Image (tube, rainbow, N blue to C red; front, side, top):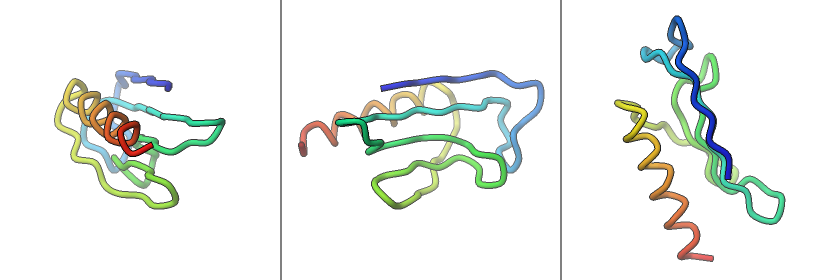
Length: 77
């Protein structure tokens, strides 16, 4: 698992907050869950081969959402 969060001078469009981040959960060398706010795409997560939007309100809440998704994936494994 890797979690990196930067506080930026300006938002990364189309996000309106001043954070850039990437969070990834890897199993056997393969990403099974990833959160990021890539320029042009905004806040989203990768689950398997699909992308879903993420509702970013606060960093702590985003970390909690990521942790809950990881926990759910571990239960299914």
